[in-house]
Length: 605
Image (cartoon, rainbow, N blue to C red; front, side, top):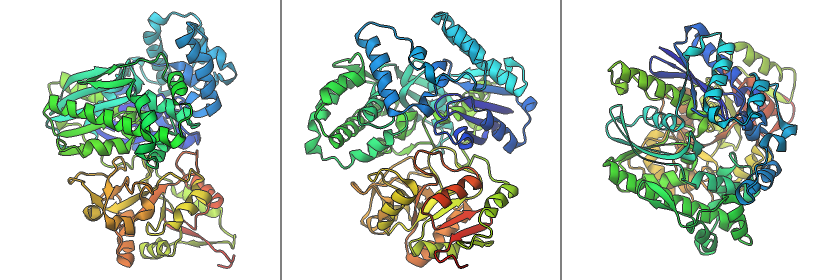
């Protein structure tokens, strides 16, 4: 059974499931080099089919995530192309008039200079429909539109195309994609919005799901987005910067903004209620937070977020009777809040799959389709659907792509090309303070690099934080890096782990004094927490061996690991992408499949 699944939204993504297992998954941004590319993922679709050697006519089904579809944001490239000023204009000239002045401004007229009808699909037809104002038929029309786009692209029968509910996709990905035992698992999903919901509570037992509660008025996802904009950063992209900043705020300084947040929404059982319901979160909070420091706002926001999610999770644990918990949806990217849920004494096991935000909807949609099909056949979905084998689900470079990248350095005496990749030598380079870019094998799915598209450094050397930030990543100084840690050393470095698996950098932990000495550059510099990748050899043998060699030399069971990209760009995909960042940034070595390219300061090799 071969199922192609598509997420056509922020960071559009394609995935392929074969006989119940996710064979491959990659986002369109990796090929277009446009961060959060929301266009129909034509290249990604062709890539996942090519990786698996599946022809379009061999597909049994194509499934889109999302029953509803809003083309306006895709037409104007809101997620990939809007600046902070564009987002402010959207608030001032679209949302404020709608929410406070009883006006109905036309979104596409407001951003008409950004409309792109040249992207794949019959967008002139979409514009004609939008101009009719017939909202009653919107769901049906845009399902038909997506069917036609996929049918034309793949040359398949439109009847093969179906649609999976947004929050079911989040929840089924969290459940089936995880490695937790499949008996009595609490599934929480939370995000800004999707198919008229933004939070759900479900209990799963052996492939049987029971929805315990859902909400369409959960505000945290939209609240975080609004505060990201108010702090001068890009919503739907830079929320992680606000979370990173929050740890620098002291509680005694953020009580004022904290009270402002607390006066709006509170947890009510498995749902949420308002003390004060703002017509528009951004405008309401902008007026009430004026004069508070930026770090106080970030700290108060994170504190409020953690308290709300912990109380909600506690209520859900009690209602479900479960002790195993999985989390899906964009709010799951808040690793500090996830840490607080995992620390609850009622929680025995907690798991967050890679990229729980909307780019994983493609994977979730495949799980939803296959789950429903198996149930109609009278089969137990849990006996067929398999967890993610690992996160290395993207394409790998061909020999010709590698050779093309290597040829860029041939004849240039400022680089040395080695045709042997020796883990001991590379570990030695790390101990000397050298920064290494590694682009090998299949790329990771999602926003976290896990060794195959990573920048690596010695985690003991705090001085490297500034060097990587200024000469390679070009990002905000307060943002933490993360460590890759040998799994058998986890309890040496992490406090309160409770034996939980953390292979994907989706959970945060408090750290031991040993970690604060040996892994300091990979910890958050304010609160000394970390978001680790716990690495087992079966997941990535060569990367594991590199960490082992580093441990032999230093006694340290981990390395600093950050994503291989320049700030504002997607993670590198091809060897040529990696070579460009290597040349432009302050990396000392570049590892490609079968090659090590090293900068030679004197120009003499």
